Amino acid sequence: MSRIVVVDDHQPLLDVFREVLGEEGHEVVALPDADVEELAALRPDILIVDVQLGHAGLDLIGRCRLHPALCAVPVIAVTADMRVQRDLRPELKRLRARLLLKPFTLQLLLERLTEAGFPSPAEDGTGPRIQDPGVAR
Image (cartoon, rainbow, N blue to C red; front, side, top):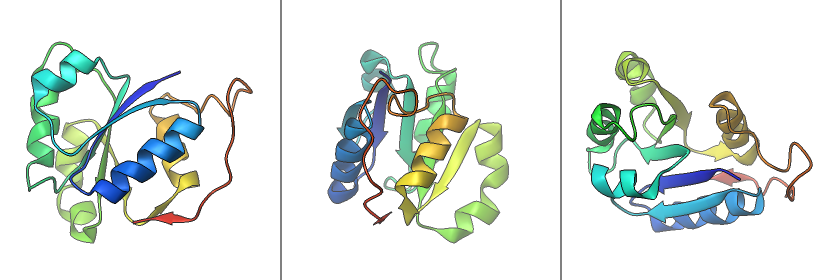
């Protein structure tokens, strides 16, 4: 089981991450905001961070890359802003963060986790597998 920490200021989306990834067999800690020390104390296997977290999501990812306990933790950067894909792709690459554009499907989320080295326990037969509930916004 992987510990996934999600930082997003949109509570309904936090609830979706918690429910969907929890049903996939992951331990999910969902936070509306967090600092680097709080994240380090949680010892995540992977981080999912809203890029536009009060316009500080990229900064948070950058600070995680400088923290000894978080520097190697895979990051998925989530955003609804299509401009991020074009304008910030070099920065996301430098920060070694995978991009996930909203709205997204469960399948795409699970693909990003697998790319980061964390397949669903359901994929290897050790956990439950849920049906794709559709698009998360």
